[in-house]
Length: 74
Ligand SMILES: [Ca+2]
Image: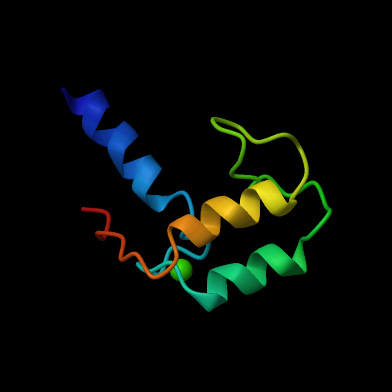
């Protein structure tokens, strides 16, 4: 039960790169800053661990979550 809650939280947070509670342009800037690089924080697609480079696949995932609010970590 406990493990399941943790997994859900990770899924919600995946696109909130700077962990400020919302997926927005600041997160997109972080991704663009590391575009084409090996940067695991921004390498969020394909799941679960990315493919080793920040590219359009990762941007699509971020865009899908854009402006979603992320519940704060308890
Ligand atoms: Ca954010």
